[in-house]
Image (cartoon, each protein chain N blue to C red):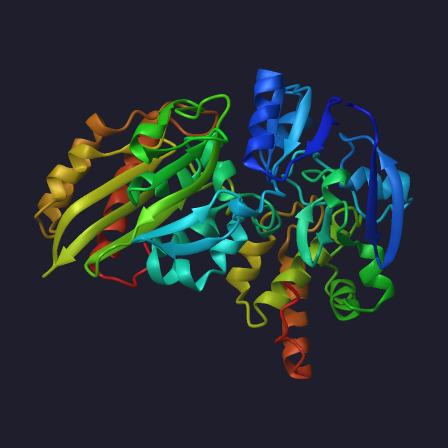
Length: 289
Length: 167
C-alpha cells in the first residue's frame, strides 16, 4: 500500500530534532534510513503527522575509536559497518553479524541507531549491543546520558529512550586480546528475520571460556541474555557434558513463543543447536559457526 | 506542513525539479512523475526487490525510500543502465539463460546482480544465491537467474574489467 499523508522536515542538529519531538509529541517520528519505518507506514501500521529526517545531522555519522571505546554513530549505515576495517579489527562480532542483516539494498540505507532504537527482538544489532557490553549515548539536545544495553531494552519494542531523546551513538569497550566473538542465526530465507539467532562474546585462555556473554535473538520480547548458560560454561572447556548442561539451562534463560511457522519447542531446540555451534566457533577461532 | 516539497533529483544524468508529496515513494516518483516504468512496484514493503534502483551508486529499495529523501542525489534506473550499455553483458546473459519469463522482476534482478559483481567480482554461486535472496521471481525458480549471474561473472573476469567497485 501507499503510506498515509504526513509532513516532512529536515534537521541538521540534535537540538532541532528534539524541539520538533517536544512540539509534536507522539505525532512525530524520526526518519533515519527508514527501512523499518517506511514499511510500517506503507502497511498503515502507524500514521505520524510529521517525519523528522535526521540524516543531515553530521555528528551522528561514522565509526571511530576514542577513549578506549569503539564508537558507532547512530546514523552509521549497516553497509558502512560491513565495509569498515576498523570494526573488523576491533569488534569483529559486528562484522560477523552484518551479512545476516536483511539484504544489500536494505543495508545500503538502514542505520545502526535506527535498528537499536526500534528494538526488534529478532534484530541483530540489539543482541550484539548486549553481547559486546555496548553503552548507548542518548541526548535530549542539552544533556547526554549513558545507558548500558542491558538496561536499555525493556520489553517488546520498549526501550529506555525518552520521548524527547535521540540515540547519538553506541560505544563498545575495546575488547582485550583474549576476547573472542561468534554470531550465527537461522532464518527461512537468507536475510529474513531470524527464527533464532545468537551473539556470543567470551575470553578464551588455554581452551577455557570466561566472562561469557550469551545473547539470543528471536526467543523473547527483548534480546535475551542466557545467564544460566553463561554460568554453566564459564571456567569450562567445551566438552559434551558441559555443553549439555548449558543447553539444559536454556529453558530458564529464554522464552520463545509459537509463530506462524515455528513452534516454541522447535525454537528452544534450535537455540541449543546454535549455542553448540557458537561455542565451537568461539573455541576454534576462525571457524564459521 | 503536509505541503509538497521541492526536490531536485538527477535521474539517469538528467536533473529533474519537481514538487512532490512527502509520502511519495521514489518508485512512484520515477514511474508516475517521470514516466520511467522499468522500475516495478511490487510488494511495497521492502520484501520483493522489484523496485530496486541506485542512489549515489548504491542499490536501494524504491518503496522504502521517499522521493524527498533522494533530493540532491543521483538516481539510476534500469532505463539509464540499459541505455548506457553498462550492464549489456548481464542482460545478454539473462536472455541466453532464459533467466526471465514475465520480466516483472528483471530490472530489480539486473541491478541487484550487477551490484554484487562489482563489489565481489569473484562471488561464488553460494554468494550469488545469498545476495539475490532479497529479490523475488515468481516464474523462473531462480536457477536460471543464478546461472546468468555466474556466466556474467566469468565473462567479466575474462574481460578483466570486474575489479572496480562502483560504491
